[in-house]
Length: 179
Image 1 (tube, helix red, strand yellow):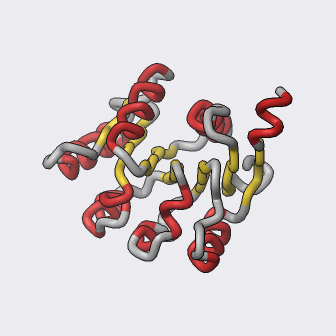
Image 2: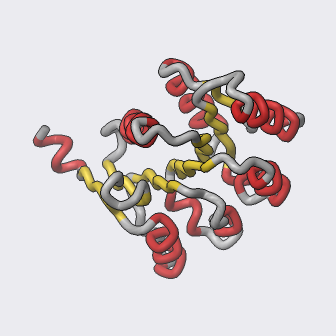
Image 3: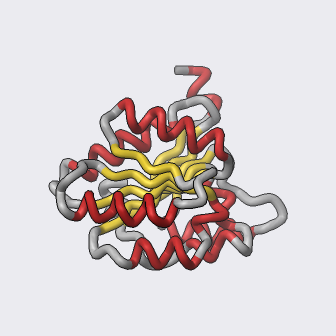
């Protein structure tokens, strides 16, 4: 991922640590002494809550947009605080439904800070509606999946591979069992 200019997909078997590996990747990007915020997109509220719990355990200020009608205000306020160095390590966890929302894109574009996109269960982003979230505004990109290939949708799979610049790490179930 680092050698690929902080772009790529981790294709790892279920239960092998995609979330923690992704947090390690955030840390690796931080080692570059860059100021950036992290946007994590997830398919379910439960997964969003799990990400928040994990990120906060690592000291990240985490905004969860799911289940909050005032997510726009929360997001803008947090970005401003981050821009003014009042908080460190900002992560915004959102759903795929919000990820494609033009208001969400507008709020991101209001900030000139670089952005890392982490798409958990990245195969979801290949769906026609979800592809609207694949905007050029993300400077760094990381996709996470156990199953990259979209069934009966090779075009959607290709869009994902192109946007994230291919699979950069693979850890299969057979490797996990052997390990």
